[in-house]
Image 1 (cartoon, rainbow, N blue to C red):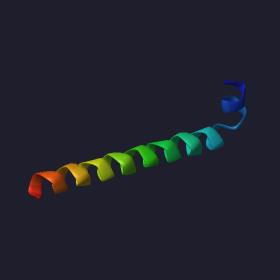
Image 2 (cartoon, rainbow, N blue to C red):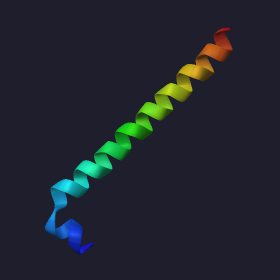
Image 3 (cartoon, rainbow, N blue to C red):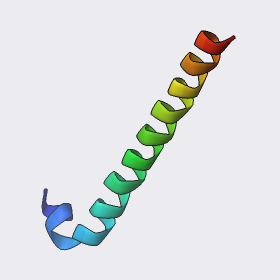
Image 4 (cartoon, rainbow, N blue to C red):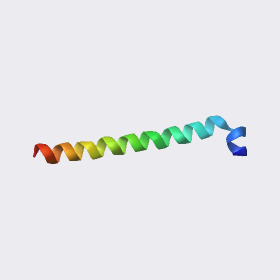
Length: 39
């Protein structure tokens, strides 16, 4: 918490990166599901 207060930009960047990875995973998962339904 103290570190977040001292360096909020860094924490924001970390959480943002995590969100990006999460969205990429969801997109990848959806692609697999659609492929299975179509094929």
